[in-house]
Length: 466
Image 1 (cartoon, helix red, strand yellow):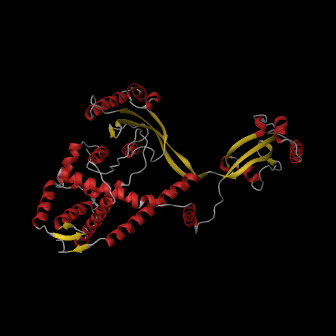
Image 2: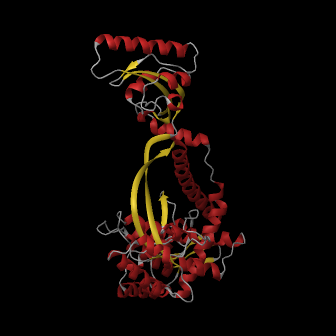
Image 3: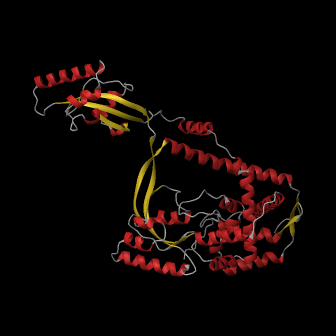
């Protein structure tokens, strides 16, 4: 079992493997120190933790009051201990005074938000805490009992742990109501950001999509100068006829010597310009839609080109990695618990490694809609699957099979089949920019809102924490 421990206690229901909208709970947990306290659990030695907490309890007293609710020295020291454990290995030891102040500020902010949440009628019942607790355990690939053991190492009782979870769920919902739902990013914001990123960079020609039609007057490989000249004259005459208004498609069908004999009127199809020969792109660069080129010479002969369509491309050079994976899913039930499902999938993995076909086993045993296609989930972009599934999938090499993985849907065996890079459309890039700007705006709005909320609260600082 790995010692890394992360949080994502989203309680949104979903009946599919696909990822539901990103929960803000994790941000709230981390921002208030709660998520990071659990991240520190795995790094705490039981004796060291117990000694630190015992020492804190011996000097307990009230250090601050937020409206009518106290914050004790124990509260500050316990959070400070957890914050110390967050420091990356090898990094300088945090300043003790600054860390104490950070812990106190976080606790004051949390108290103010909880009071606001209660005043707004926000409540979280036991079933919601149960769901969040199960999601945390599942994402970290531990049982609920193991989760409780790790929490106990930190000196928290199960009741205290659940109460902290309830508080953070309340704060998360308050944040969604007061901040997240008010964050709006306009098209102008997106455009200004893109322009600011391009400022100072050499202007690049926008990518173009072209649809060209062609008539080829072929030139034999060993043609004499006289033959080449005659064929060039023929090409010029065809170009003049087309420019004079004769139907280009008819001319292509009757006169073109291309391999397809002018089928489809010589049309070659709409595609990014870089997928056409450079000669064709250069020859039509100054032409508009409907224009016809002069004959241009290539190794094959003389080409007369007509621009059927020319427009700014929806594709760009920005690439995204997509993964094609397949899986076998066993759903948990009264008849099949997590341990049994893991063991069964380990057996399947051994059979595959011994030569059995993954797809055949998926068709026989997988318990979701992909079973009929051999477990094939198709090409997926980042963020398409639930986090616990995607994190494991991202670490696999093509052909590699995972160990059994627990998600909110059951237990999976995953195999990555292949990966590819695909260009993002301009629209997809703009939506990515919009999402990034919105996340940044939410963080800024949240920080300002917390400061405002704290400013409205009555905060009395008493004896300094020690």
